[in-house]
Image (cartoon, rainbow, N blue to C red; front, side, top):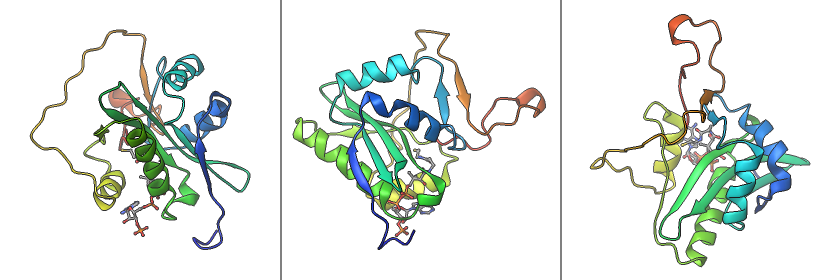
Length: 172
Ligand SMILES: CC(C)(COP(=O)(O)OP(=O)(O)OC[C@H]1O[C@@H](n2cnc3c(N)ncnc32)[C@H](O)[C@@H]1OP(=O)(O)O)[C@@H](O)C(=O)NCCC(=O)NCCS
């Protein structure tokens, strides 16, 4: 799997990719997977609304990377940016982000943003390296509209006591 010989195909993500992409998410330690937002139904709705902007990377006959990307018509957003562990540091993340940005630009979108947990050293190193700017003059606000949209962090230990279910090193 040398950088030079690995054949990687970057294509838009379609609803038919859901099973493989979800299986990939489940291997990404620290990922926060949401009960509703990440369900098949909600991802299909997201892709229907944003049919050209989400992406998968295929290598060795399977999906090894993906990004959910969409726009509200004013600004773009990236979610669940990931590459399978054994395919990292081969430029796949960079290529997928470039794909998303190209598609957003084509739609007339001028700005794109994402959330990276401060504890995610690798993720933050990646964004810095590929030229993204960290904002330190804003507070991030959210308001939960549906309490049933529970987040489960991948790789959290079941037997960690009072902190059980909490992320050790959340990635998104
Ligand atoms: C972040 C992630 C998507 C990067 O994907 P990738 O395909 O490995 O990224 P690239 O190969 O395009 O890396 C580009 C550059 O980013 C930097 N970088 C990437 N991973 C890094 C790491 N773990 N530590 C330090 N720098 C890193 C490097 O400078 C790298 O270039 P180099 O390999 O020539 O030194 C991948 O590590 C991942 O899936 N991590 C887990 C999920 C996650 O944290 N997602 C981000 C949520 S905000």
